[in-house]
Length: 206
Image 1 (cartoon, rainbow, N blue to C red):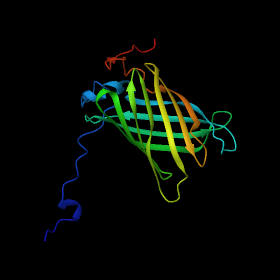
Image 2 (image 1 turned 90 degrees about the vertical axis):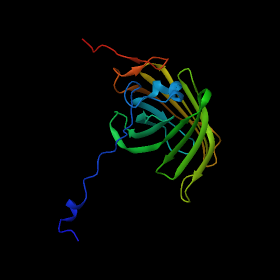
Image 3 (image 1 turned 120 degrees about the vertical axis):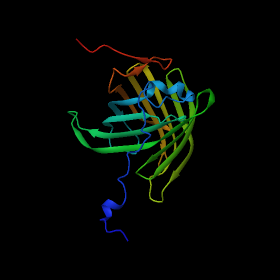
Image 4 (image 1 turned 45 degrees about the vertical axis):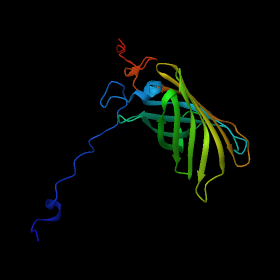
């Protein structure tokens, strides 16, 4: 048996060698199937409005969304939101989601999204011309999760640095109807792509 202390018996673990990329020109190079969604790479943040018939009132929220990749033909997706008061100050944490968008030939998308509230969605759709439109294929719920039967999500690049988001939902006995809309700005506008997925460099403000 070794006389070395446990912390000296094994080498320290190395950092994970395959970090995700948030920029189309950074290593690893994006997979060719990601071409229709390269403009989404990066971190976005902004504000939105929410409503639903089962809620006591409409609400305003802030949101941050990140898209990244590791060289394979899918996007890693992370989103978090927090409620705002009438003055724009944070009230409390709200929705959080994470998952992956699996890109297929001809811009088809298969998305897997999970939430800590016990909801897991599989959606399918299409990415083209700066827009990704996803509709529910299947929803799985934990035993105590709120009933959600369908959603539709639409992400649209209105310009290089602006992303709009709308979310329809069918839940707790209500049919599919509008739930959320947001306007997000690219967090670092010096890192962006043109509509063909090529990197553009913007000069800093004078």
